[in-house]
Structures are given as structure tokens and as C-alpha cells.
Image (cartoon, rainbow, N blue to C red; front, side, top):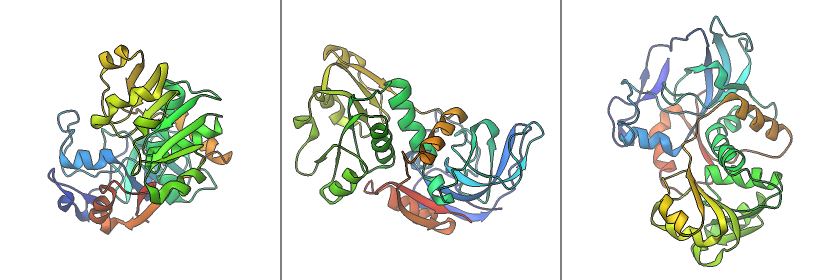
Amino acid sequence: MKAAYIENYGGSDQFKIGELPMPEIGAKDVLIEVHAASINPVDWKIRQGYLKTMISYQMPLVLGWDVAGTVSAVGSEVSNFKVGDGVFSRPNIMRQGAYAEYVAVDADLVVAKPAKLSFEQAAALPLVAHTAWEVMFEIMDLKANARIFVGAGSGGVGTVAIQLAKSHGAYVVTSTSSKNLEWVKALGADEVIDYTAQNPNDTVRGMDFILDAVGGEQQAQMYQMLKPGGMLVSITSQPNEAQAKAAGMRSAYVFMQPNGERLKKIAQAVEAGQLMPVIDSVFSLEQTKQAHDHAETGHVKGKVIIKVK
């Protein structure tokens, strides 16, 4: 099969396009013929070797842990899918990824593709939607009328979080650059702050929750946006718990773990008109290097897609 893969950690110039053996599937696996994959920050962090002490991969390594495609084969213990079914998934990050013509995925992580989505749209959703859903509805327990600040409103997680929070009746405040203000507001945000003109940490107050998608030095300043007893949940770095407690707040860090039941709820949200993927750009498999270079600029609106078929 054709694949984009690396044989060494490093920059985007490590990508090679060539033939690799077809994935072997286990009894509980689904073999997916990949139509589209998408890029997430974890992809380039793994490519650069930042996570090699956490996850041990065999080279050559195929990256990409978002996929949409059709079922090509099923394991002997899989009964809920058949060849030809349209599906999407966030595969197990411990296994080989989806920048390839085929990928083997645990069947319990695979869900029928929402009929209203193209394969490219479906590939844009799993990781970011899993992340937003886990943070807001499993960690925060976000309810109607709660006030939430969503960091990086035009990013992959941000665009999904805004839509899901609004569909659940929350009041959503977010930030983005001046060129994206109206576009992000159209996603459903109640207030959108131009971070190039003012720091949200200095002006936003009274939030019940913060979804921190930025991290870094500014994280400690975010607590002043919260009500007493409010909660910050980061998807980028472990918050300082002592600092949060000293401020009278709660904090948590989420390194998302996918599951099929959550992805089914996400698919239902799509079918109900509560969520639509946001695609920044589409690249071919042969353009995987350029796709990574573009995604790493940090100035994309939504998701960068790799179209395989």
C-alpha cells in the first residue's frame, strides 16, 4: 500500500512517500480503506520525537490518528461492520496511523460515518470532537446557562467546542485574531475577543469554566477569568494544582482517550445539526510534508485534511 511515513524523528522533511506492507488485522480489528485523514498537533509532536519516552514506535512509522473511509475487511470476532460500510474513527495512538491507503483499527473505536458528511469532513472530527466532548461533558459536566471560555476559538478543538457548548445551552466566550472575528461568531460564540487587540485574561470575568487550548506562560493568568470555585481544564499542559487551589479554583489536564460510545454521541450531534466540521485546507497524500508545514504555523481555521482516495 502507498503511505506517507517516517523512518527517523525530526522535521517534516523526514516524510517519505512509498510502499509499505498492508496492515495485519486481529480478530477484533477493522481494516479501513482510507479516504481521508486529518492532522492534529500530536502528529507533529510525535514526528519530532517529543513523545518517544511515552510511546515506543517501530519504524517505519505512519502518523495520523483521524480517519474516515470504507471497511475493507473485518476480524473474525467483528459482527457489527461489513465490507463497504462508511466509517470514521480516532484509532489507538499506540498503533500505526492513517496517512496510508489502509489502516487497521480496533473495532470498538470505529463508528458509522454520519451520512451528511463527506469523508473529508468526517476525518476532520474524531480527535478534536472526542477532546471537546470529554472535557466539557465528562470532566466539567457542562450544563445549560453555564459560562465557558474556549481558548483558540478558530482552532480544531475550539471550532468544535463552541458548537457543542452552544447546542447544550451554554454561554460561550472565545478569542481569535481580528481576521476571524465574524467567522468565529458565526459558529455560535456569544462573545469573541480579538486577542491581537486585548488580552482576554485582562477583560473576561465570571466564567464557570475555561477550556485551555493554548497553555504556556499565560495559563496561570487565566484563573482570574473564573468565578470562585470555577474550573480550568487544559488540553496542552498539566496545570499547577497548588496555584489553582491558592486561587480558589479547580484544574485538570486531559490527554484524550477515545471510545466508541462517545464517538456515537458525536455522530448523533452531527445528524441533529448541532455540529459541523470546519476544514481549513485539503492536501494529497503526496503533499503530507506541505500539509504538516501548513498545520504547524498555528494559524489554520479548523482542520487540515490529507485526502488519500
